[in-house]
Image 1 (tube, rainbow, N blue to C red):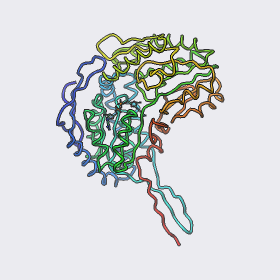
Image 2: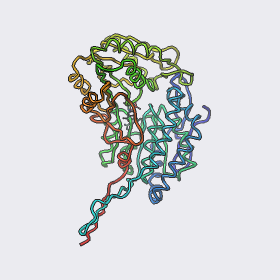
Image 3: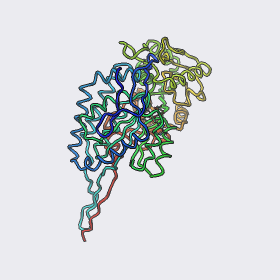
Length: 469
Ligand code: NAD
């Protein structure tokens, strides 16, 4: 990619006070250079958002919804360019990148069709009491590197629909495609409504503690989420935190092994395992453990890894060097703590490749089981007592998702209700959609995104009470 991509501040595409080089993880070589903001430019973005907010909030709700639809149309119009850029900065296979861009447009349209009308809570001779959903003001959106565009615009859509304005900050290793969408947004949205700045992992605290910011919508690791909560505390900013997960899948003894193995692989190896709601630990009943391990080893050995632009590739590289090094450490744990039955080494080539890996006979105490691996390495654990396995599944500080797999929905439903997580799937894993609230229990987050529940987190619930006596 040639020219330095610019940031979007106050309706203008601007250079940064410095630049940032972005690496293609499939080659470990330079892919693009982007503008990078100083603290003064972050302040300028917040000031632009603050200035634009009253006029934006004064527009009819329907007009703001029409802007979202125009943005969705623009994404669809540039979908192929955006998807190819996403592959080169993020690493995922092209079909997954195409799906990410398509989903970002779908989410924009879905939010545009939602409403939060005034709710009448009481209407009688004594009182009329209404609840209004008012904009909060300036919202800061902070995105991670695993789904840079989808996660960013899942924050932009509800925030600006409700009359807030926004400063969006992508992760430093994946800013390119987000800035390309910024170029599109410049032609559509009024100045200041959406500002996009890039940092080198140094402006997060500045943005989340800024006195003119009313809300922070953050997606990233649990460790960083705790820092965001601490820095937002000084002015009690509204917070939505979507954080890490270590999702367990529990397979009961009555399943069709081949069918379940395919569903497990589709979840655990999507985006090279770098999905917050990927299946990250698989617990399998003793009676079918060997058969399941054999089937998983066969399917995973057949997964083609490589550059996401190559046809047929199912698993791309890890997104960045730091994650690649973490994944290598998990491979060592896999070798020491269990038996590797597929993959088990780094891949060929210069890029950050890990061969898709399955590990059996591994202990619950292994870091590969205890921690979020965020890598294409699946531990498969054995159980004989289903009551006890629910306890093992819940024995974590995280609670984003989980799943139960069974031929009997009634059996699965009973156990599903006992898994402590924001979502529990039965006979699938990782499904999400704009109309379904999404969030984590325990240290996987605070609040929800998507649906009118998620939308309402971008509003101040404000009561008007009229005395009629
Ligand atoms: P990260 O926490 O390292 O970074 C996320 C973002 O926070 C980046 O934009 C980063 O620049 C920014 N940041 C860094 N320091 C900050 C600070 N002090 N204050 C504010 N922002 C700061 O996370 P990551 O490694 O990019 O993403 C991977 C993690 O995200 C995984 O744990 C994954 O499970 C989680 N995740 C969660 C969800 C969800 O919806 N729950 C979705 C995707 C990813």
